[in-house]
Length: 266
Image (cartoon, rainbow, N blue to C red; front, side, top):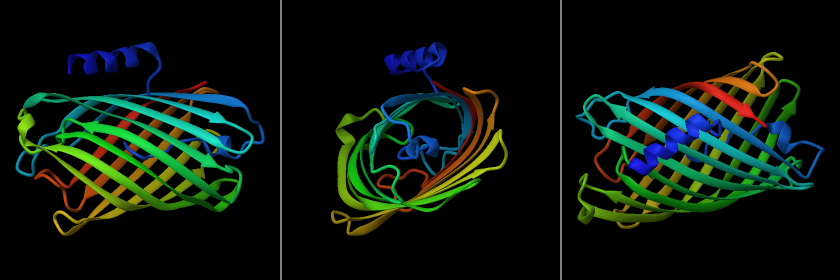
């Protein structure tokens, strides 16, 4: 725990800072005629949310988060690495941390119909998810791409493996879940002016849990209003919502997240 907190603070202080499969990469990079270059994004955020441990425990959390993304654009493809680490606390519980690493390849990035593969590692101490690993792939279709608006859709399959803890501080209560899932997303980007943009994103995943004989549905949405302060600095206002219709342990099925912070690009 101490090492994770220290790492989060170092990221926040070093300038290399900023959930999930939420991919916020400037579409201009994916469609750029230039090739053979790297792009870096670093975010620093403060947020407030209600990601409580159980339905009966209504807590409000404060959070510091750091995010560092790396993008390499080749002539045909784009390679994306997203890293996130968050430190959370509340007045009635001990501090927790969450984090993930997500790697994605967008093949034939400039085509209207392109292909994607991805892999992800994630943990969430707040919700007692010790580890989540997943890998998958699918298609990405650009429905509308014109000045001021971009709409793209993605659909594919993935395989997910999770380690959960039924009782806090009791490693013997750990258990595992794994299943294939269908994963679908919709992304909409509006350029409202030279300095203001609006991004909307939605995700739906579904898989069949053969052990419990139930279908597990997951929904997520993300809305961000972005203000360009300079060539390399952007102020981001973000609202996120997540709903897991059938949690594998008794935790709140839904939580929201409100974030405000700076993004620096290189």
